[in-house]
Structures are given as C-alpha cells and as structure tokens.
Image (cartoon, rainbow, N blue to C red; front, side):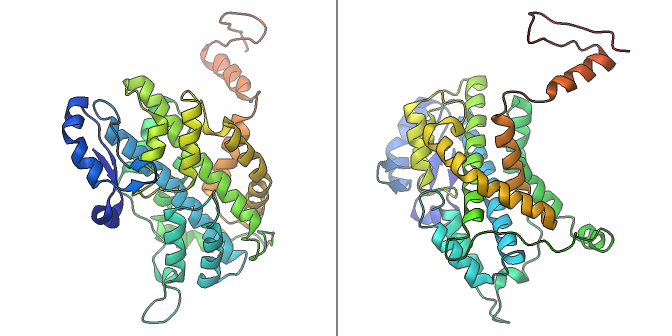
Length: 346
C-alpha cells in the first residue's frame, strides 16, 4: 500500500493507495476508510489496482512532489536574487499564492512557513543557514527511470531530480564559482509584490500543472502496460487530502479525468489548456530573464521546452532520423509515401 502524509498524516489521516487483490482490499476497506484523511467527497483512499499498482501510484506521487518542490525553490531563488526580497517578504508572496485556486496547496503553505521561520541563535532567516544540498530517498529516481523505460517524457520531474543530484556536488560548485563567473547583472520583471509577483506566479502555475500532468501521463502508460485499470479521477480525489501534493488544483484534475478518462495529456483539457495559454507569457518572461541573469531554473525552463515541444505539430527529429539512416541504415518513414525507406547518403 502506498501511503502519503508525513508525520502529520500519520496522526491525522493520510492519503492511502492500496493495491493487490480486490478481495484483500475489501477485507480492510472499513478500517482504511476510517483511518484515511477525509475531504468533502469522501475518504482519501480507494482500491488502486492489482499487483503493485498502489505502490507505483505512490511513487509517481513522489515524482510530482519533487517537481513542485523544485519549482518553489526556483521561485524562492528568483525572489531573493532578482526581487531582493527577504524571508518575510517572500512568505507574504507565498501567502497570496496560497489564496488562489491554481496554487493553493500544502507545499505552498509549508514553503511560507519555512521562509518566515527565524534562526533562534541569530534571529535571521533560518532557511539561509541551511546547507544547499538536497537529499532524496529514491522515489524520484524510480519515477524517472520508469518514465524512460515506458517512453513517457517527464522533463520537469527529471529536472527536479537532477537539481537535487547537482546540489550534492557542493564543493565542486564552490570551486567552479571562481572559474566560471556569472554574467553581468541583468534585471528583469517578476511582477510587483502587491500583484503576487504576477509573472513569477504565472510561471509557477504553468510548471505545477505540467508536473501533475507528466505524472498522470506516466500513470496512464503504466496502467496500459501492466493492466492496472487505474481510475485517474479517483486518484485525483484521494490526493486532495492527507498527502504531500494535496492542492485545490486536484479538484480540477479529478473533474478533467471524470469528464474524459482517456485524456491523453492534462494540458489539452479545456480548463487546463486555458490556464497554460494564459500563463505562458509569464513563464517565457521568467525563463528568458533567468537565462540572461545566469540563474538556474531547471524546472521552469524544462516546463517551457516541454510545452513548446508538445504543442509543435512539426519537430526537427526528421533530421535526427536522416542522420540515423545515414550512419546506421536505420531507415525512415516519409510524410508523402507509405512504407520504410533508406537512402545512400554518403
């Protein structure tokens, strides 16, 4: 059984994702429905599917979590380095975000708390005393490996995992800082504090939607491959309470898959497509500005690349296929003719 909720969830009720046989679930259902977190439309537990379905859904939950945590870390870095905000000011921005349907979530809530908390010894922001090397337990890696094996692109989640790995190279980074200087100072607009830093907020909304969407796409492929018969709307429902990625946005995810269980990608649902289209200008502005300033935003930039690639009816991989055929006779398909073709290029 996959279980999410942390220490508080253990005390007050977690989100529970049981797999295995349906008969086994039926035997424990009264107990787990009582133990689970409760939301308006029921307990945050349901039968997920046969075999390891429950554990796999929990693994992907954690992959989505990696993505959102890194998105918020990038927002913090930009608010501090570009916006010049201190911990309390950044927390005020997060508090504004947490009132919106798109960003209201447990992770935004605890990020605000982390940014407000003071070091008892110095009285300064505690987060600035913490070593900038993030640990991991392995579920983000499992998510990415599974996605690669199944042929599902999850670049936002992968970027979050890679950011943790790169952060662990702290001594190398400190040495590189001296020989690979940052570009000249470059200021760009994140949006006013009063507006909740609108451009940065929009960038984070788009990236969070995409992180959820990539996770759901992976679950869809796993369900087909392993005959899990996952109910994606029900998964959205049980993630609304108790778990680490609980958010108001999950009601929209529940609705989207309730309306179309075969939805190929969350971004093409009408409500989510409208959100992406509205937030893209802010995302482009933030990613472009960060690139010119030399500030790494791996999740935000990966999100933008993913959206632009997914919406492109024509990608340059036709040239890649030509090169593969040139050096390895791997053949190619044509747009205008059926069949497989090979050219003697050299």
